[in-house]
Every structure is written in structure tokens, then in C-alpha cells.
Image (cartoon, rainbow, N blue to C red):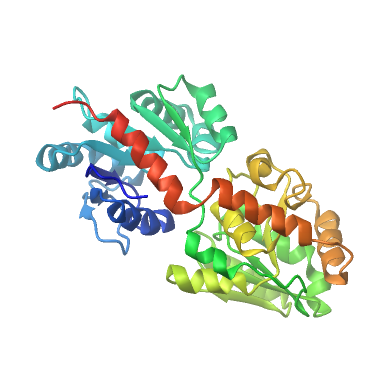
Length: 356
């Protein structure tokens, strides 16, 4: 689906983000004219918003003046913001401006950041109030955002998976020996990855499973050091790569595993469902829209014996997963084709544009 009328978008977000790497070119493919602005220094080409002052927490606030100048020069139809932190900066820059703002919220924006302090909550609410529309990847996340303040207009669309990758769906239901498990979550405290290694120690030692983790995130160096110290065999790491390489890597595994303590319809879970992996996830509210109704094996968060029991069951072949995998693929086709969901976002943004 390609839009006939070109929309002029100023995209605001973290240029290091995997989501930006996918979203920006798809907006352009669907006939939008897009400029990305970012305070961070990532690999995606962008307009640099300079960091000012030594206090990291003030970088976005102090960059608002630069953003205001860029808006005046670029004259976008709409500002499309990828997280609430950038949303706060955009809200400051758009004071007394008629340019609409679409705020795409992340799980951490709503589930974690407002709980850090009164000031964090205030900034998040300020961004939500200024937004002409708020886009979320799940009903759960949107409901949590509405607890913070009333929202003007909303859209629920997961990022989803590109249609071309459905060809990688595992038709063969047989599992590998050893069982290949991928944990495609960043190394960060909230993702609880060390819990996974310790919980599955016996299976690792027995050579029954392998675990593959991202070598990226705030605690990546410490995590790798901790895993090395434990001395378990069968733990592997992958580096940041292009989209095709990552999707092919994921498709070579049997099980998708997440122990995250906070989430909102994670894209990696949807990708795993599209590829035919067996999803295993911790029981937290944010995953229920995709992992519920027998779409995944769900275990109580931080319950090591429960997680080990599920993986042991899969290793032994005691569970029949053919129907689960079929239903998961159909659900992805209905609700989470990336190109279709980006088109829905564009259509919503077009409705927000005000006459000059």
C-alpha cells in the first residue's frame, strides 16, 4: 500500500534504534518525504541535534530550541515522534505552533519512566497532553497511558514483521538436537537475561540446549563476563547486523525465550511467531495480547523451576506445537504485517494535517 499524496514528516527519535532503521525507509517507500532528527549518534543518516551541557538528563530539554529552528526551516506537515522523551522535546519546540504531533509510545515510556520520579512523570504527561495522536503497539500500553492523562486520538498498531520474511516460517516441526534457543533481547536489567542462564544451567551442562543472546545493551560487557565466569557450555552471542542477517539467524532456532520483567507486545515475539519458533515468555501483562490464548508457553516471572520444566518438556518432545505455530502465523498475517501497519500510521497522520 503506497500513499498517493506525499506527506512531509519530521521524524524524531533515537538514530541508534532498530525500529528507526526499519520505519524510516518504509515511510519513504510509501511516498512520504521524511527527515530524521536525533540527539543520539546512530548509524541512520539524520539531522544532528547537538547535546548541550554536561547533564545527560537535560540534553533533550536543551535541544528543543534547535528543534524549533529545524521545524521552521523544514516546515513539516507533521512531527512523528518515536518515544516520550523525544515527545517532551517536541512539545517544548511546538509551543504556540499549529503543526500536529504524533507520539509513538514505547513500553518503557509508560511502564517504567513515569515511576522513576515526579519529574519523569511530569515530562511524560506533558508529551502525552501535547500529542494530537498517540500510537501504541498494544491495547494494554494504551490503557496504561490513559491512566496518566486523557488522550486526544489513539491508534493501536504493532510494528510487526515484513511480509517477505514469512517465507522463512519453519514448515518442519521437528526440533534440533541440542534444542536451539534464541533470546533476542538487549542486555539490560529489565530483560533478566542472567536469570535465564542460571535457570537452564542443568540443561546447558547436559548439552541438551544452546542459548544465543545479543551482544548489545547497557550491561552487555558485565553479562558476558558473568556468563564466562559460570563456565556453562552452549552459550553464544551475535552482533548487531542488517535486517536480513538477523531474521535468517532467528529462523534457524527452535525456541524464542524472553524473561523480561516489563514489556508491551515485543516486536521480537511477533517476529518469532511469524517464523514458526516456539515462544516461551514470562507471565507479565504486556505480552498477553500476543502470547495469550495458548500462543506461547508462559511461566511465572522469576520462577526458575517453572522455566526449566517448560524447556525440558520441549527438549523431550512431550508437547505438540504444530497447531500453536499455525495459529501464530495466521495471527501475524492478520494483525502484524509491517508494511500494512505503517500504511495505517500514515493514513492516521494524514488526517491530522491541518490546512496551511
